[in-house]
Amino acid sequence: MLKENVSKLLNEQINKEFYSAYLYLDIANYYINKGMNGFANWFNVQAQEEKDHAFLFIKYLQNNGFAVSLETIAKPEKTFKDFKDPLIESLKHEEFVTDSINKIYAEAVKVSDFRTQELLNWFVKEQGEEEKNINDLILSYDFYGKQGLFALDGNLMLRQYTAPSLILA
Ligand code: FEO
Image (cartoon, rainbow, N blue to C red; front, side, top):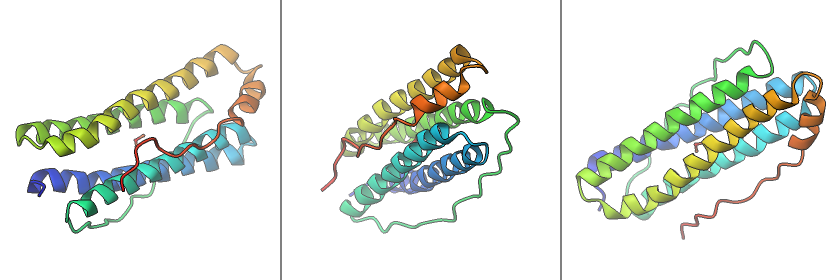
């Protein structure tokens, strides 16, 4: 049986993950409209991964007898001033999600909820990878520069979706 506060935070995290998927779909739409199909592909894959994260939290709560409550997903209200802007926004967003995961972890530690800590270990690692991925993309963007933007766009077309390594039966 999970403690009430940990369950509540995990339930809130579902919404944050779905919002992340929404945000990245919105960014993919932005790039599609600018003819940058590789950037759009990269963010579409990212959106799929975020949806997976939401489903993992749902499954974990269901497996632990918690009645999941789905809340309204906010509309992404971002307007982007240039091609780099969505990348910076994505990094900020991932840092926000990392912070959110860390807060749940801290709560699980406080109440000696070792099961939830075990679940969150995967997410802590995942957040590290996601921050690195978007940071690498920002570095590539700067490295390729305006002249190389379409070459970078071509490379980003190669990103493929892979299912999460965490499987909850
Ligand atoms: Fe699932 Fe990128 O946070």
